[in-house]
Length: 139
Length: 438
Image (cartoon, rainbow over all chains, first blue to last red; front, side, top):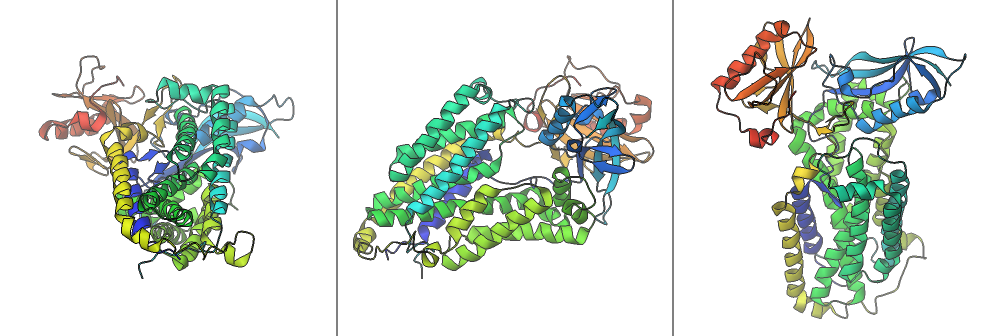
């Protein structure tokens, strides 16, 4: 077997790390901090509240809303700031806006941004909902 | 023993190259399909027009994807050459960055194959300089590729520790990420772990430990197998809890980490006859290989730090203001801004709940048990900013129209007093020095 020193891969690890922390995230180099760049104390997602139950917007395909839901976190000024994933929020609202009319099959639902917040040291989150739109929806 | 060994020492390393190529082709196909759906949000605020054009013009992105995929077999045959790897990385990089520019940021599962191609290239650069035989060049390429994969996980662990410190281990960040991604429903794993702080803490600690162990992935056969399997388990666990599937590195880890040539005959080769033939020569000329690697490494590192990449890339994956006017503003949560610190008591029951910097200004979020939350906009004082009763010498302190200035006057005046009495804030460093009217 050809003697290849461990120094070679060790050196390449060093080069890659030095480049990664220089550019942060530029293909194909990344710090891969994956939300670890700062401590998060809140989370949020857009969903559908039917009575006391939370459901995914994808469980409904037809919608009639009093006003289009706003994916912007500023739509919830009392709760801002909260962690949110822009792409997921936009996808949820785009799904609602693209749906057909529920005709007479619709049931009353609320599209809400559900917010979890960790403000105590016991590790448990408080939960609140911010109303984005009242709608009728059907599967 | 300082000699590097691999689970693929009896194997045909073209299989490894094909694995990387297939993962990259998968990335390019999925990227092209994704770009075909159009922008999913406002573009990156600093993205150049040509990059957005690549993302938005389907024929252009399709042409780049097809050309890059067509180059992959060329790269496999000519991995010792610089240009095929460069063309592949350039094509894939353009598409990944174009998708990141017209969306909320890059999907970083797509970075692994490219990183391994880069690592392979660096290993081969050393081997060419050292003048070793083609088999040994393949070994050096493999060593470089696994080193790049290893460095990716070490960077992930390091950035978490640097960014969140030991606070990562309290588990709230992990629970927040899980809940932001996972489906609603009491049965979901994300909901379960979010309600079990001890479990979340355990997962958070395990995440950093396994990713840090990834830094040993390159060392030898045993570390490759054990660390590789741990990393695969980690990715599967993350997918189960958060629905975030990093399947590209999983495929690469499964192929690279296990001794497939020992288990099945197809990827096995008998190359004892030509290995070792140039051992002495490699020893003699290794210095030239090191010089070449050092030169390439220095070029990459200087390019990474001397050019202002971070001012662009740091705006990816940040919480953004994406209001109805279509603007997309990166927001960076910070603990301290001048004399203000998150959690500070401002009097009358108000405290600082969050501090966020963004281009042109900072948001100070204040909270009160009865009055709820309000937002104050702090920035360098300028004449074109709507005046506020809380402005002071050299700074502006505005408030949202929804806020009642009478209700927030105590905390706003407290913030103003602190700013006035403290050393001047370096606005250029904090928010870029410009000002946007609230």
